Length: 624
Ligand code: SF4
Image (cartoon, rainbow, N blue to C red):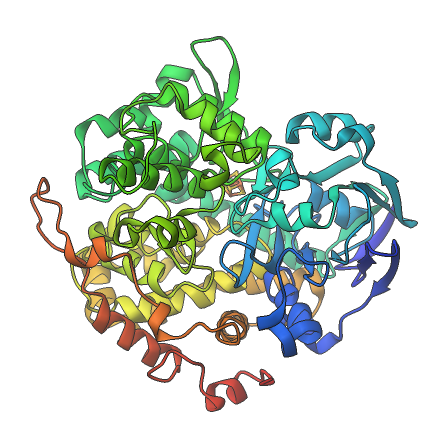
């Protein structure tokens, strides 16, 4: 095996229309300023299509689909399996970036490529294979129509082969179809539909041609040792190791962010049946994770029918549990498997079904879907993927459905993307996150609910300091998604260094709430930049890393403003702003407006939510 020191800096540039390819090499300055992964993907998209962003139909050959591996993958760094997808979303009409922990990333990188950029459209369904010699194209043949599990099994002939694939939902261009790699997914925003629109069934990378060697091996080993220690000692990581993301179920009941009946309520004791603790015992769970990983949040277990299945993530549990009035975890395991095989986003699917149930109750449209009725869920999932009957309607997602039938106030989406399973009335920072997040109703833009509830550093029901924390975490997470590593490393890396660890929690809590700028100074995220320095050989400090994250986040916002986004879109479904849950002891709704105003200030946007020329100049982003 030959060595690649740091990164190959080679990206496959593929045009499917004429089945040609070449090697693209970004400039050194772009690598320094945009890091890789999400950042570099957005920059490439902007450089090539930035002057006509608004006119690009996401499902046309013109749309570009980038898969960017980032710097960490292949090096053996902690939680380094991850890579990023970047495109214009057919669901939202905005930029969408998505992170995946599947093995395609490692195979692509060790085939010698840091990324794959796809444009055009194949005349007939196609499979692309990439190896150290380049790209070959073969007819998709019988694989067109296969589900995501079957097609990977069919195409990956050797242990060196790892793929990204679509299932029937992607082929049929369901607007929230996803892309699979192993049992991990580029989940949100309909990237699978973009791949389907290009007639691209799969990309198979044959890896292990190269070994990825960090430029500074000594620093790399030191950084890795420290990062492993921080993760091992961190309580949040331990909880995820034991119970996965479903460790969030019981706090959802206790603190009132659990989604019940399309978010009509925010707590229900029965929701506890779906907890990670309950499922660990019931299904005798073991780990099933991205590789490599030290946190180990993924699990699988044995269901009562004897089948071993992936344990669904908290989002799936929430949206196919309380959200549709179901409190039995058994069918959610089976539906999760079905959706993964069909290749569609479980969050958007669950939210759309929840909306349809409430719209049916209110007489807006006729449906057999009802809260608590679960015998027709499996069928509707298949009908969505194949766009049959009512499924063809639900394949549009909640925004388009509520435009068509009414019921916008309870369409649980922001900017066209269905919201995840945290009720924002249970954490106002999380509400701000949803409202301003670049890709729409996603929980992970800044994920403040972790600080508001899971870690308990910020009070739930206050607007104080939330704007500054959302801004800070967005910038940090944009950097993390560009290295690229798992967002969950952030908790150990931020909270285990000595100052944060040994400051008594009540003091840290007061500082984070009343003096956020001081509290941010107490935090140390140098592990991310140390890894970058060790792997690439280019020195980067933690504040430079943060600035890169800021630049990446603002570029994404700027691109979205070119597609019509402004302050009018930075809001929440009316339900969260006007309806307190009568069944919950705290009768409060989200006070969004002052948080959004403060957020624009923290970010350097004008009153209409647009990045100012001064900010763009400071971040060295060219305005188009
Ligand atoms: S913590 Fe979970 S999501 Fe993150 S890399 Fe590990 S298994 Fe994947």
